[in-house]
Length: 94
Image 1 (tube, rainbow, N blue to C red):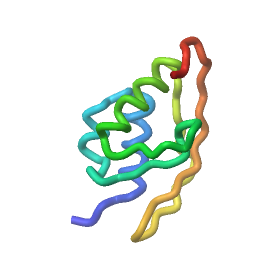
Image 2: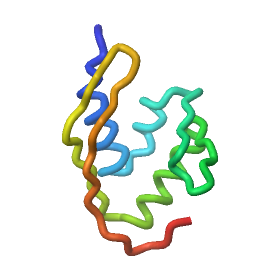
Image 3: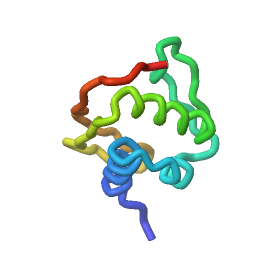
């Protein structure tokens, strides 16, 4: 069964960012995934072990964050997205 990249991206932002579901990170993020640029020092985040605490920290600083996916451009190799975060900061970051 082919993967629907658009649905997958929407699920990621809804469940991970809007709902804070760590289990979705473990389910959808590849174990060898590397994210670069999310941290101030450009340190790499590797797999769910690094990404889950990053999401928890960000969501604790911005507990009312809501990501709205405006558009998705899927391809066989990757899916890019345009998103619009809406939030207010009430906690500390870091």
